[in-house]
Image (cartoon, rainbow, N blue to C red; front, side):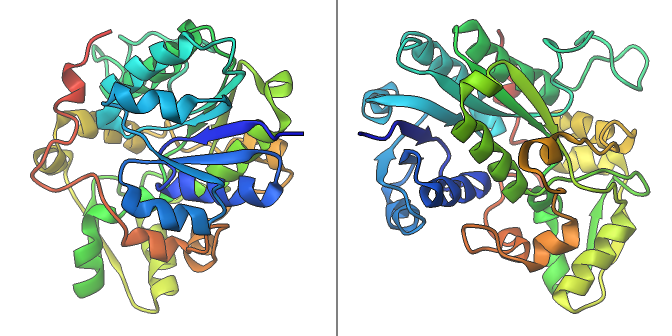
Length: 326
């Protein structure tokens, strides 16, 4: 009997690599891993991918080969790729009889369909709208729902591995990092936990998880001084957190990202959700444990810290996505 084919988009990313390794080990699916550059194909095969295909959200000609025979999809895309994801969702809708289940990566706060959510009402700032990045995450969910697909959504807190990437050089050479989060506590989530939850949901299928939405967090909220202590302990050196004003942060990364970070400073992401435990039967991974232990892909959180970074100081990575309309 042939195994069902699951398509892993963004397979060479932090979550994608973990998911490829987990699903390959489980053996329930034929795992088809997508990558933008086929230079990464050998890495994905080494993690257990049965098939590797080139896939680009902005290139419709790559869809047919990627989707041939697929019944389940792990859907993830970088924030600036929103327009490509919306178009891909329409394409999936045309194959709704074939595609039985989609697991989508999203963000806590994209709650339009599960809560009394008004995109024009900010959680803590009078007269302001919900940050555009959160609205984008909802659009990403809605596009799949509107396409008539059975969707499960992982609404994740801020990723542990994204937290300090913009300061890697300072951390390594000078022993400090800076951002505007200060004493605000956030329950940052490990990417390997997101992959573990996705693996459970895909394996148990749409019969159990269709049209379900899960908030994933870490096991405890932490402020920046506590993060500095954990990272310094993991690296075997003393690290210092230096507070940054929101104005300076916006000058570094643009207004769209700064609006999102304002939510991180107002307690919106402080809570710890039980959803990961309810899905997997274990507590979420703590930050220090994430840094010092390996996930299914063989990488530790410290390994991930130095790999790739979308957010460059002096560049507004969200400029194009901010112009997208639905």
